[in-house]
Image (tube, rainbow, N blue to C red; front, top):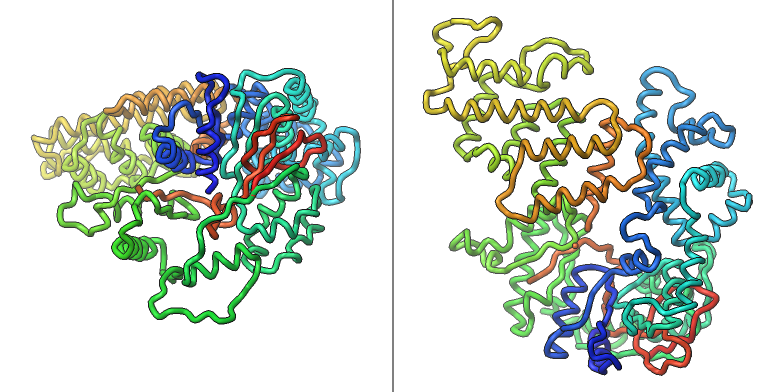
Length: 639
C-alpha cells in the first residue's frame, strides 16, 4: 500500500520536468523491491534516485568523506585519551578493567582489551550524539552522571578537547540553521520509505530540510486502532518510564511493536492523518492474526481452524543446515500450491547471514551446474547485506593474511589461504596441485610457524615442523630421494616429489616465501599509512582476480580506512582487529537478508500508515515517520 501511494505521488509531475525524485530507503533489499514495484505501477522507474538516510545526512552535514565524530574515526583519539588519563581518579573503573592495577600475565591480558574497549566506547559516544545529544551537552556543561557512569563525562570532555573539530551538537545546530535559512541543492520533493526508527538528530535535520523542500515519510504501521489509542502520548521518555505497552491489547503488538510506539511518540501532532488500508483478510489462521493485529484485539470467538490450514507454520529444526533443508521444502510447497506466488515475492530473514550464506548457496540456485538436482536448485536466490570482506575475494584474502599475521601460521591456515581463488589464480594452483601440496605438508610434518624466529614469542625456538623446515625438505626432494639417506645439512629430502612436480614445488615455495615476507612485515609497531601500504603490497604479491572490480574496490577501501585520525603508531594486533572489524560490517529472486523481526520494515497485517512532513503552506502529503523535535513544520498525514 505504501508503494502504491508513493507511485501515485511520483505520477504527479513536478514543476521542473527534469527534476529528480529522491527516495530514502533503509536497506538495499527494500530499494530493489520498491524500484520493481514502482516500475510495475508507473511503467518505468526513471528519474528516481534511491539513497539511505545516513548518506543524505552525511551530505547535508558535509561528512561524506570524513566524519571526525564517527565511531571509526573516534577510536584512535579515544585510545590516546584513555592511555593519558588512566591515572586520573575519575578513571579508576576504566583503569581497573584495563589492568592498570594488575601485574604479570593478568596485566598483559587486560592491556589487550584497549582497542576493543576504545571501539566500544567510540560507538557508544557516537550513539549518544545521534540519539541523546542533550546528554553530551550536559556533560560538557559539567553536569554529573549516574554513579556507575561517573567516569564517562570527564572522558567525553577529554575527547572533545583532543579532537580538532567542533563538537557534534554544535555542528548539528549550525547545519539546522543553514538549512532553515536557504534551500539546499537537493530535489524539491523528498520521500522516506519504510523506516521504523529514526534518530532524533536525523529528524531535526529533516525537519529543517522541510523548510524549503517537500518531505514525505512513508512508514509502516500495523494497526490504526493502536495509532489512535496512543495518539495523545507525545514526546520522548526514558524507556524504563514508558508504559505505553499497557495500553496495547494484542500481545504481539505489545512485545514486538516497541519501535512503532516509540516512533509515534517522537512525531509531532500532524495537521491531518491518512491510513492506507489493505485488502480484506482471509478466513485462515494468518488472516485472523492479521485482522486481530489491525484491530489491536484478540478475538478467538467463533473461529475454527481448518485441518489443512498451513498459513502460519512453526518448524523446530536441529541446527542451521536442517533449517535450510526444511525451508526449501516449504518454499517449493508454497510455490506449487499458489500459482500466483512468485519467487521475487519471497523474503527469508536470517539472524546471521554469514552463518547461513554457504548453506543457502549449497541448497539453492545450482540448477545449471548440477543437472538433475533438487528442484530448489532451479530457484535463483540473492543474498543481501553481506559484509564486503565476504563478497570481495581480495578483501577475503586480506582478512586471511591479517589473521595469519596475528597467529601461529598453522598448516591448515596456510593451506586454506592457498585454496582461495585469487591465490590459486596468482600461483596457478589446480585442484590436483593442492592435493599434492597437502600431501607434501603432511609428509614433511609441517605443523606451525614459518621459522624459529616466528616461533620465538611462543617460547619455542627449534626449526623442526616449521614451514622453512618443510619447504627445505620439499625442495631437497626435487634433487634427491629419501631412500638415498643423503642429508643436506639438517634436511632430509622428501621422497614424494616426482619429476613432473618440480615446477609445482617451485611455485609452492614462492607462495610460502611471499606469505612469510608479508607476515613478517605485518608485525611490530607502525603508523597506519605504513600498515595499509604493506597490506596492499602483500595482496599484490599473493593474489589476483580475473574480474576487474575486486581490485579497485579493495584498494579504494584503503583511503577510506586511512582517513581515520591515527596520529600515533599502533601495533599489528590493533591494526588487524580494526581492519577486520571494519570490513566485516555489512555495506547490501527470493531474497535472504539479515534483520531483526522486531524491526521488520513491513506490516504483517497488510496495512500501512503514512504521513508527511512538508514545508509551511504546502498542500501535498503522503507519508509518516520521524522522531522528536520542538520546531517541526506542519505535518500532513493520510490514513
